[in-house]
Amino acid sequence: MKRGIATIIGRPNSGKSTLLNALVGQKISIVSDKPQTTRNRILGIISDSRGQIVFADTPGIHKPGYRMNERMQRAVRNALSDIDLVLLVVDGSVAFGAGEAFTLDIVKKSLLKAFLLINKIDKFSKPLLLPIIQRYANEYDFCQIIPISALKSENISLVIDKIFQYLPDGDLIFDPGQYTDRNERFLAGEFIREKILAKTREELPYACAVLITQFDESKREKKKLVHIEADILVERETQQGIILGAGGLRIRDIGTRARRDVEEMLGCRVYLGLRVRTARDWRNNDSILDELEVGT
Ligand code: GDP
Ligand code: MG
Image (cartoon, rainbow, N blue to C red; front, side, top):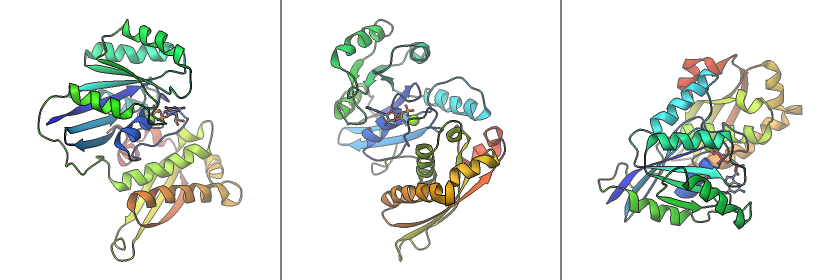
């Protein structure tokens, strides 16, 4: 059996989480058009007759500022040790700049086997591919360079086929039925955060966190109902009002959308209670960051 770990790295917004979901065929990593959406390392697992690939999605690579960002970068560093393959995701629709150079440098220094995945090919015309390929191929000896669309699932099965060719033989790492290392409670919090990110702008997405305070499965078997309560943390009082929206409309909308995703994941009905509270400077608070599993 072939098996191994492939770490997905790339600039914020290049499409790493979208790619992970496409590879696994399940929603496990949340997606938004705002950088810094992914705060944790999330594993996605696929198993078939050929063996098992464990994918690690990582927070985008950027320079530390808050304690939270330091811990996010720790997750990136951890994800780069003990791995068999790097998948460098680049957004083919944006020009090569300092951020791309920074990320490419990390791959070069790692000396690991790496694939270059040029993402978002649904968004730009084919002739633009060649200069990108040349640019990267000049700098590193990539095992494979594959244009993909994570969003439209283009070339995803090709990527999987190629990865299997580069993995060592060995025993499976995870149970073949398992598709992520994160539990439902964690994912529920993330799905809520995804809806907040979609509905807010400017500094608010970064100032928000979701803490699951109750995840009651006692009625899951008999009544097909899971009762979930969550606190949405913000950094200032004024931000509470933004999350609530006029007449509480925004939070109701966030709740409805998040509940649908959580119900789909759990395969049963969900009661979702949301509360907004201010936790000043939570991004520098290690005990909150621990609870949110940031940097793990
Ligand atoms: P990450 O920060 O690298 O994890 O990026 P995300 O997966 O969160 O994606 C960032 C944004 O790019 C989201 O708005 C995605 O919908 C979008 N995106 C990701 N992959 C593609 C793609 O293949 N094509 C297009 N058009 N958009 C994509
Ligand atoms: Mg992400």
